[in-house]
Image 1 (cartoon, rainbow, N blue to C red):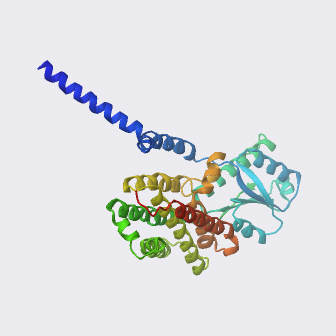
Image 2: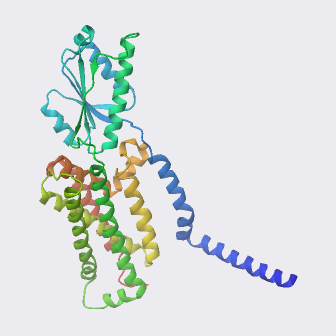
Image 3: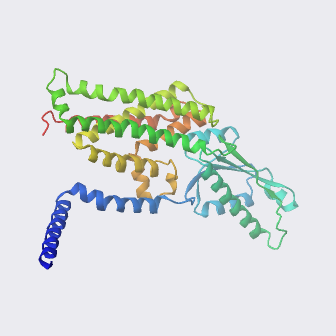
Length: 376
């Protein structure tokens, strides 16, 4: 009995040793087993936060007195906000929001210090970009708290009910509907998965089954084969984009304020970018499993965490903010919010569009370089 037990344990030790050696010798397995959990915990630890930090604001000061200047300094010194610009007219407010670099405008009413001294209603209006409703509500609460604290400092021992009213205007999304935040992100996520992941799996499947070699020895050029493989996914992705927009508009009441042709063109651009990523992934591997892991870890998770879909990019550490620049969905979400929700034209999204076009060209060039006619 003991001999049998020793024999079984010896076999078990050999199997365990063999498996450990296999894992150690395979860097891809090591990355999956050790790298992915490490990356996930670091990303979730740094990205998931509900704090406001260094958010861009503009100030429209109609009073220009010592009190408004002190209150502005207090708001800016809090660390939550930084001043992007001073506004001199009402017409500049919506224009500033559409430029995309401010999240809130603080409007001081006329004769603020005099009204406050006489005990009359001194008004401070807050106008926030509610295309991201959670961020808009947080910014409102932070600003209200700073204003209340300031009033207690300059009027110690006074009645808690201060003669300052703080009306709030939620621009672009007055009802604070969550769909304004989720639809652009869901569209980016779905188009990325369908276009990139499914394309990479489709091409690597041909490699695994050996049919890619048959296609390559046919009269068709490699470019013709790749186009034939990806065009159906372009059509499917565009249909999905149109369906999402229609459902968001008819069921959830998300307006389409911008040009529909521009919106469709931007969707085509992003789909092309995602497809080029899928082709590039397919040139890196001949295994569907590896292609799926690269797509899930390299595309799906960054799209959810680092694109601004759920968590504001401004709240992330500086290093992660730099990393977000290489996430195509980050630029597409900005485009969708500007065109659909804010109603801007192409001039407002030309930078984002140029970045996506550049990424598409880069991935296609890398794919052409990696594509090997001789399948190993």
